[in-house]
Length: 189
Picture 1: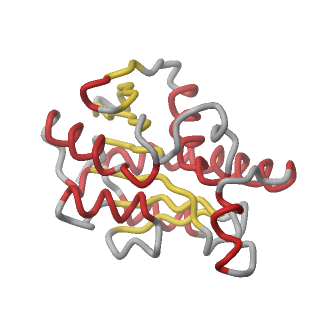
Picture 2 (picture 1 turned 60 degrees about the vertical axis):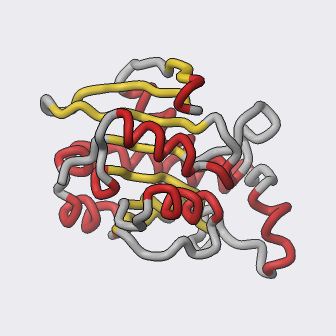
Picture 3 (picture 1 turned 180 degrees about the vertical axis):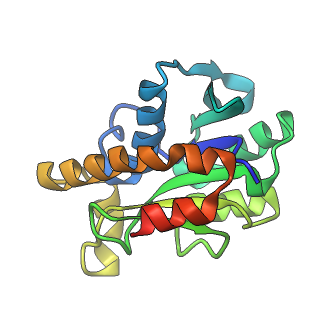
């Protein structure tokens, strides 16, 4: 199934722009930059949206204007408005269980404690969407997680993350056309 919607999870506002929790949005912004497209605010859909074409396949980019824990609201609204099924959605999000500079593509599964993913699965009534898990590392103890994800990565970690996201761009055509096995092999290696 082709990917018709790519969502970069984030918290809104300048205070969160460069935080680890917004790593998913960095990829979506990179895609927009690569295709030289701009986002348009869609207040009714609680989102900023952009659209591009890859090999005659249209794909929308979504940056939620809600806080992370309510990412399901714009996901549900946009997917219903454009008639996009859960298995045509790629959610790009920060991942504590991967070190900075690692990235994994996954289909379906649980939310792993990520409240943005939890809300999306609840609102869609399905967890059968694809995830691009952007490694941000782990602070070592669960009590440190909140401040860690809302903090900024070191310059070395941010460089690693951005370099990985740029390399992942080479798999974007495979993702868009729905060749997820080949994309997974390329991304996860």
